[in-house]
Image (cartoon, rainbow, N blue to C red; front, side, top):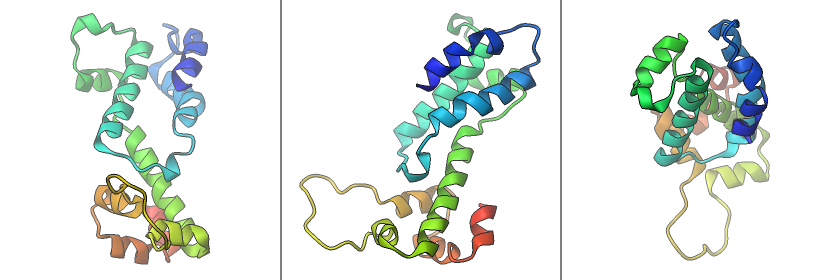
Length: 158
């Protein structure tokens, strides 16, 4: 859906007369929210991080009109765009804010996020726990993460 939105805005995003900073602002305003819709509750794996980073570079390559046959590295594309990888940071910030909101609310969502729901588990490999995945990427222990959610200012700062 985000790529379709990008293609609908191609006349603006591929315009040679427009500055790259303006193109990036349009991208962040109209395309990235479609891509990240509902990302606050995603459990992001390493493969998903790779796919999100690749789509971010895909957007920049199209805006700068760089074909893949030119063999320009992703770091060079980011340097040409005058930007850095911001998509994963944006998603992780939203996840930290959302977790803080859920933990302070203290209802059924709190139980689901901490994994304290009783019952039988289905067959197969255990699913990745949201709080554990988020604490790994933020570099803190899950106990510290859950305690820090009680203070609103610490959730905003992450």
